[in-house]
Amino acid sequence: MKVKNICCIGAGYVGGPTMAVIAQKCPEINVTVVDINEDRIAAWNNEDVEKIPVYEPGLPAVVKEARGKNLFFSTNVDAAIDAAELIFISVNTPTKTYGIGKGMAADLKWIELCARQIARVSRTDKIIVEKSTLPVRTAAALREILDNTGNGVKYQILSNPEFLAEGTAIQDLLNPDRVLIGGDVQSTEGQEAISALSGIYEKWVPKSKILTTNVWSSELSKLTANAFLAQRVSSINAMSELCEVTGADVTEVAKAIGMDSRIGSKFLNSSVGFGGSCFQKDILNLVYIAQSFGLKEVAEYWEQVIIMNDYQKKRFAANIIQTLYNTVSGKKITILGWAFKKDTNDTRESAAIYVVDHLLNEEANITVYDPKVQSEQIFSDLDYLKSRSKEANRSNLKVVHDPYEACKNSHAIAVLTEWEEFKGYDWERIYQNMLKPAFVFDGRNLLDIQELIKIGFVPKGVGKPEFMESFAAKPAMVG
Ligand SMILES: NC(=O)c1ccc[n+]([C@@H]2O[C@H](COP(=O)([O-])OP(=O)(O)OC[C@H]3O[C@@H](n4cnc5c(N)ncnc54)[C@H](O)[C@@H]3O)[C@@H](O)[C@H]2O)c1
Ligand SMILES: O=c1ccn([C@@H]2O[C@H](COP(=O)(O)OP(=O)(O)O[C@H]3O[C@H](CO)[C@@H](O)[C@H](O)[C@H]3O)[C@@H](O)[C@H]2O)c(=O)[nH]1
Image (cartoon, rainbow, N blue to C red):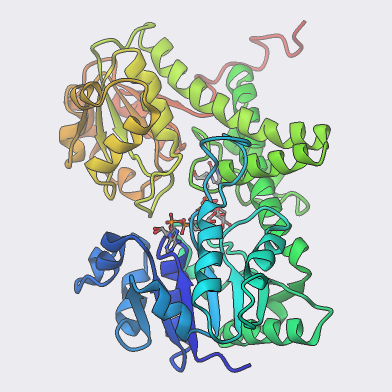
């Protein structure tokens, strides 16, 4: 089948960048990204490409090249479905906040709505591509909805999970480690659908990197990949606490183990805890699936990754309180970075939200600076937790657009996102304007601790020994 028109339902962090790259690489295909969120679509259509709703390095240039030629953003979902031979479903699949599976299972409400809309509107055969991250066997539910309309339209359902990471989305899309396509490999129609989708990626991805599996393997591989990645972060974070109490340095430990080619050096940065819209949601979903099949040990094994991550965030906040003489009440604490990682304006599940919530419970006065996150977003992240009134959040937290202003007169600074610009600040100037002792809690091990000490700061990294003690000073074995 020759694909001439693609529709993507969902103009979010995945749908937008992914379709922009497909449109750029396949100028002969019309790509229409649709969404029910009118503001979002309007932002994607903003004449100034720097004002599109997703901040992602390199994305404005790609959008500029394709938008209006073969890349379109629209709220007319029906028209785009009708015109397309291939439809990506890239809508949100957050953790359920109600009913059975609350707090664990993926909420597939939006996926089902898409399927019903496709079933209602379609008049010609279509390939439906699961781009959203979904529980294994979701394709079976989609098939049931689509095949029960009785209008004779034939559907092929493919799973094509997305592995891009925010902040590096364009590079990840242009040069993916692999593209995974799950489909009905047994039937001719299934194979045709797989090669139609593969043909799109082959425009820029080497065929050797395009992997075909059955649908269930593809769906489950996405959850597995995220579980393995998050597990590495929780594993190194577990070691960080052991480092702090023994005098080992987690960066040195990570380097030493990472040089073992079986372990590998990536994704071993100890931190204040992982955030983002995916890791927690996908692991909870995995745990829920394992539980529903009665696999208690499997579920408990993966749940520990989340438990460790929650602990790391709490531990970080508790360390600030303890270091500030067991009280932060009325003290100004400056937060550098609110996004869940650098180079994105996304704050979903950012560790900063939970650390600050904890500090606000202790009556701290918080000032936040983030180069890309809007103040309304910061307040709405805190309001969502419902820990206190909206008014209390606004009176105890200030968002400031100048980092030096943010740090002025503060008792402590906490670095919660690894934005590059933090490294280049005039830390001498920041020190002069802070209360002494000037504490810096580096939740990303981003800053040069030795430099900070030279200036006069009292810095604390994650998994960093507080002072180098002699080998003989403490007994090596405990108890
Ligand atoms: N964010 C990431 O880095 C990332 C990476 C890989 C996979 N994923 C997965 O991709 C999916 C989408 O993630 P996202 O971060 O882009 O989410 P998002 O919330 O940024 O975007 C989803 C969009 O879908 C729209 N939508 C929901 N229901 C709709 C409907 N019925 N019709 C039209 N539009 C609808 C929403 O309005 C929203 O704009 C999720 O399943 C996620 O787990 C995300
Ligand atoms: O060594 C590390 C690596 C990451 N993180 C943190 O882990 C979180 C997630 O980071 P990252 O994985 O880089 O970003 P995401 O955009 O969440 O991407 C993950 O989630 C996506 C959504 O499913 C997948 O597509 C990607 O492959 C997967 O990396 C962030 O808070 C990071 O700061 C660490 O603390 N230490």
